[in-house]
Figure 1 (cartoon, rainbow, N blue to C red):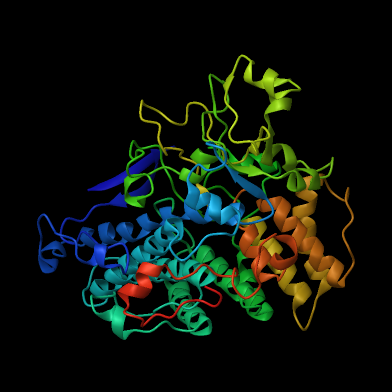
Figure 2: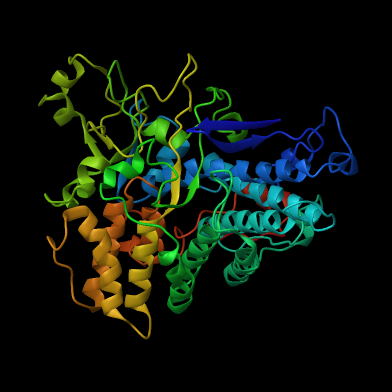
Length: 508
C-alpha cells in the first residue's frame, strides 16, 4: 500500500509497506532476524511494472531520518541549546548530545545509524532487482535509487566516517566479513553512484519529492565541498545555476506551506500530517510521517491563532539571535521571540497571557525557530504527535550559491569576483541591494561566507557539520575534543554485532 500526501493537486509519495520483505532497517541483529508474518515471492511481486515504482518509493521513505540530523546539527552547535523540560533532563540522549557528553551507547546515535543503513538497504534492494529485469522507466528509476543510496552514505560518512560498503544489499554474515572502508573510499563510492545517476535523471519529475538532475548535481557538489575539492564542487554546482532556480524575494516565503517545493528548492524531503506515531514508538521512523524536529522545536503553548504547540526543544542561543543585523530580514523569519510577539516583558506576563504558555527548562528564553515550528491548523486530529508537515529543505538554492562562493574563494585558482557575486545574491536578498558591504578577498571573505551560512541556514541542521568541516568546532564549541567529536562513535551494539570486524572511531 502506498501512502501519499495530496497537496495542491500534486502527490507526494511517502511510504510503502511491502509485505514480502519487512525490509530490515539496519545491520543490527534485531532487524535482520525479524519474524515475518507472511511472505510473497520476489518473482511473484515483480510480475507488474508498477511493483518497481512501489519499491522505488519505499526507498524514499527512510529520508524521514532527516529530522534527526536537523536537530543534532543544531543541538551540537553554537546555534542552539537542547532545552526541553524536567530540569533540562528531558530525553537524556538529546541532552548529552547538546553537551558533547554522549558515549558509544547513546541511543539517539544508534537510531541514526539504523535509519541511514535502512535507507542504504532499501536503495540497494531496489538496484539488485531492477538491474536483472526490464520495466518501464528503468534507467530513471535506477538513477533515483543510486542518488538515494549516495545520500544515505553521505550522511553516514559525515556522521560516522568510513563505513562498510557493498554494491548489492547487505545480507546476514556480511557484518563479520565486510570491513569498514576509509572515509576516502566511502566518498569515492558516493561519487560513483552520483556520477552514474546524473545522466539518466530528468530535469523535472511527475511526482513532487522525487529527485531531479539538479538535486543529484547539488549533492555531488556538497560531497566535493566536504572533501575540500573546490574545483570539483565548482564543476558540479555551476550548471545548477542555469536550471531555473532562484531566490524568492522574501526570505520568509521559503518556509511557508506555499513555499514548499518551490523555485528555491533543489531537493526537499517530504513530510505529512498523516496520523501516526505516539510516545511509545515516536523514535522509530516507520511510525511517524511528520517532521519530529519541527514538532519538538515549537513552544509549549496552546490557543494561539498562528503557532501550534511543541515541546520547547532546540532553543536558539543569544549569540545567534544577536548576530543578525537590523537590516537583515532573515531574523524575523528565522527567530520567534514570544515576548515581542505577545507584547509582554516578563516571563510571568508571558505565562499569564491570553495564550496558554508553559516554559521549558531553565534555559528556555521564549525564543524559537520561527522558520520551522508548526502553525495552527497544519496538524489535524486528536493525536497530534509528531505530525508536523514541515518539509526539510535539504538543499536550497541559497546553499548552492554559498557553496559556489566558498569553492571559488578557496580554490587554488581563486576567483574572488565570482565568489563575491554568488555571496552578494544571498546578502542582497537578506538586506536589500547594496545595503551591506562584503569583504573584498582572502580569509575575511571566507569567514563572511561562513557567517552567512550560519545566518541563512539557522535551524535547518547544517551548523555543526559546517563547524566541523571548516575546522571551527574546537574554538567555538565548549567540550569539543579535536580528533574525537568530529564523528559520532560507531554504536557499541554494532561493534559487538560485527564481532570486532568494525573498529571504533578515534577517541571513543
